Length: 104
Image (cartoon, rainbow, N blue to C red; front, side):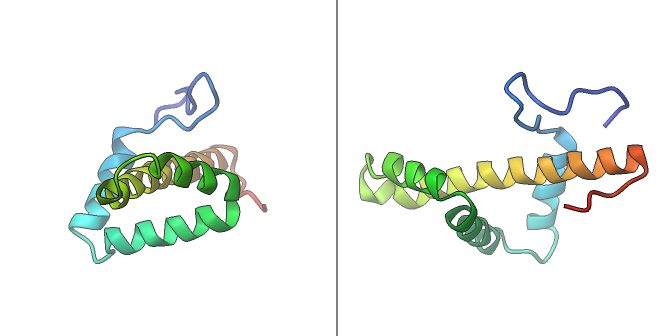
């Protein structure tokens, strides 16, 4: 990410970079990390850390035929995973630029 580049959208969401998408894609296609297992881990985190969001996703997915539920959950968790990864990347980038690591 170049210096001075905006890391978030106008609503404060992490702006997903091409580098982040490539990193995620490479780690799950060329690496040993299994994408399905990663999404299951993300889903468990969302349920634990974001119960209101998990309920919203469940309610939205429930409006569609059951044969679409798995695909819709995968899309939702993949989107969350990418945003989470980008937020972590932004945080790391900021800590390197200030010379400090976040203690939180």
